Length: 246
Ligand code: ADP
Ligand code: MG
Image 1: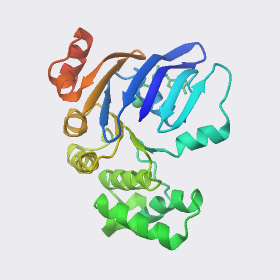
Image 2 (image 1 turned 90 degrees about the vertical axis):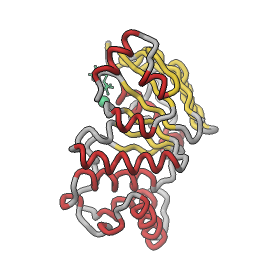
Image 3 (image 1 turned 180 degrees about the horizontal axis):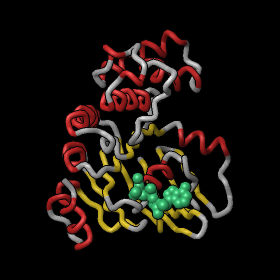
Image 4 (image 1 turned 135 degrees about the vertical axis):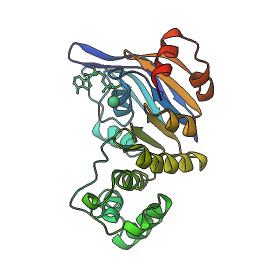
């Protein structure tokens, strides 16, 4: 359902992704692991087109873009891909001047032009799903990090994306609060939500991921079933890296 074919991303003279080819099936969860600076965030940003790849091909569902150096794809094509993705960031990035439920309603009201009542009802259902319905009217600043991240997950789901992209969703959280987020993401995984999760959190990766990808230096060093990559990696570099995770 999602395909990346030979994706390259340059920042000036720096080549951050050196030809990444990956496929993700509908309903699968892919853990993206690897050392800092290896290109995980850039890869996620290239899937939702927060960054435009320098070259390569991206497919989501029936939409497909062929990237050419120095040539920006049509805005309509970018928007179509972007709307099929939801993004969850390490530092939550909720709108501070909107309540929890308003954060979740924002996309459907502003982008999809849903009537407010319908958006509110849908947002409440999503807040229930992440265990945050009781805080619907709370301001983000009054919520714990784990609660903010759960609202951010509901917000990302509000546009019914084909894929949920999570960039180190538990890294900013104490272990106890991280567990709340792991629980929500593993529930979504068991319900068949397609996700790509960049993470250093072995507990998160092990409880959610079907597939795992080890990205180092902008190159996919190893990919395969998560269980195998985490317990019995093939490559020495993967082995050494997995041993540093906790
Ligand atoms: P990771 O998420 O695995 O830590 P990143 O994708 O954040 O890796 O970064 C990969 C490399 O790309 C790093 O060397 C980083 O400095 C560089 N990089 C990321 N974003 C930019 C940018 N906007 N401009 C220039 N260099 C960038
Ligand atoms: Mg990163």
